[in-house]
Image 1 (cartoon, one colour):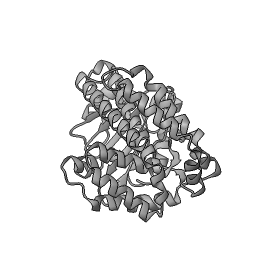
Image 2 (cartoon, one colour):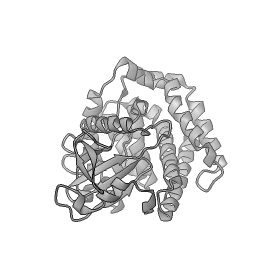
Image 3 (cartoon, rainbow, N blue to C red):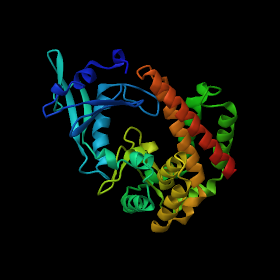
Image 4 (cartoon, rainbow, N blue to C red):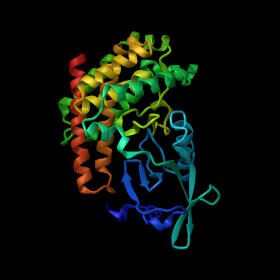
Length: 339
């Protein structure tokens, strides 16, 4: 990790003595938008001062607001995990965590979950089963049934509103076209498929009429699921309502795509089938390929952004570039198969 790119408060909190509770070790994980500090019992997440257009954490006030949003929205599925917003306070040459008054930065405090039960680890160990997916479905069906679905939220199911997110992805990755991860043939194929399907307005209008446009999770894949008892589905999208207000197929398609990405094609099909049955939503198959393609492209974009971040080391950049290539290849496969 290139520490010259890390904020002083992050460097300080990498010292176990910086906390008001016993800490023997601190692990730092970076994404393109966050610093995540993992301690013995708690996890602290801080937002990077970045502005990607679809996400704007560029000011302290915005970071404070979205930390509060993150806690509120994630408590829908993880009420015992999200403990609250914390403030960063400077004390001499060091930093302390406390309340809001006088804070120079803000973060989110979470209870540390059981890493051995993380879905990504279970998958990597080859231990993921249909029983795990059944438990996820049992959690999601009532969540979507009770999720907010106002008239304004329903409008996000209109093809022209869906197109905003889809076209934004293509615009934001255009400068990467022709590189190692995103070849022009794949870019052209995916873009033609997505823009063409968006013209099939009846598919989208049916989903609205069926009440399938909800205040969803927005980032539903294995990295954000802990297969504990109960299942924890965490880290929803808090920074942009239009990325969370969507067809439930956007969420279901995301996790199905993630399973495909890891070579678990039969489990991916099982998951969608079980959700469709339990939620009485057979019409989800009208758009599931579209949303799987969209989600694969989003993950590819995020991997590109992370690889381009000067704060990540060379190994991480190379790994993220390869991940992006695989995601874009998968998105192209979905586009070709559904065309």
